[in-house]
Length: 389
Image (cartoon, rainbow, N blue to C red; front, side, top):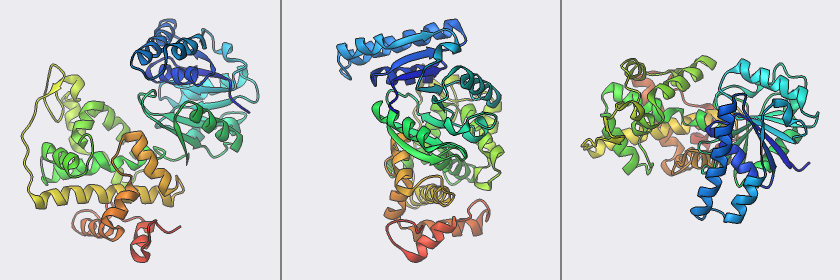
C-alpha cells in the first residue's frame, strides 16, 4: 500500500521537521499535539521552514506552497482516523508512548502503520501492550530531520514485514535513506557511536591527553568535523550523560559505563555551550579557543584507541544481528556525518591492528571493558574485506 495520508503526533522540533518532510513528499499531513499553543507553533514552524527552504533554493516556491497546502492541524487525536501511517514524536517516556499507541490503535484503521521516532526506548516494549504489535515499528529520524538523510527503520520482535516496507517506502519518498535494523539499545547509530564519547573520556581521565588535544587529533588525524568534547558541549553534557545512563541501565556492559567526569561536570552546572561552560568556556555562545599541541606518538595512541573501540562496538552490533556491516557504515556517515564507517576504518587500519590494540588495553587497564567482539577476533584470523558471517 502506498502511504498518502500521514499523521504526526507531537509538534516539537522533531515532529514539525517530520511533518515538513511528509508534506514535501506529497502526503496529506495531519499534525497533532495535545497542547494547543505547541500545535500552533509547530504548524507555523513547518510553514516558515518551507518558505525558508524555497528562499535558499532547496525547492521551488511553488513546491513550498503546495507542501504547505497539504498540512492540516489535528486538534484531537481522533482526527488522525484514516491515516495510512502515523509517526509518534512525543517525549521519551515509555508509559506515555504506550498510552499514545493504545489510543492510536483505537482511533486509526486496522491497516494503519504506527511508527515511533524514539531514539532510546525499545520498540518492542512500546508495542508490548498493543493489540496489533505487528503494525508497530520504529521510524527514527535524526535532528534536524530536514537536513539529516538517515532514517532507521526498526523492527520490534512482533513487527510485520508490511509495516517495515511501508515505512521504508515513505522514508524514500521523503528523500531519506532508510536503513533497517533490529530492535536493540540505541539501534545502529547511537549504539555504534558509544565509544566516541566514552573512550575519549577514559583517555582524558587517565591523563593520556587533555580534552583540547584529543579533539585536535580526532579532527586533524581522523577527519571528523568535531572532536568528542566539542560535540558533548554542543549537545549538552547533561544530555550525553542521560543517554549514557539509559544505555547502561538497559544493559550493564562495562564498555558502556558512564564516566565520572560527566557526572562531575553536570553536578557543577557545566552543561556545555548552553550553560556557558562545559569542557570549554564560551563567550556570547562562541567557544573560547584553547591552544593544543600533541606529539606524534600521543596522536597515534589517541586515534588508535578510539578507532579500535568504534570498530569493536560495530562488530558486537553485527554479531547480535542489529544490522549488516555495510548498513552500519552507511548509517554512521548519514546519521552522524562520520568521515568513514567503522568497517571502513577496520579495513583501513586492519582488523588485526584493532584487535591488538584492544588486547593490549584489556591486559593493561580493564579486561571486561576492552573485551574484543568474537567476530572481530575471527576476522583478524581469517582476513578478508568483511567480517565473517
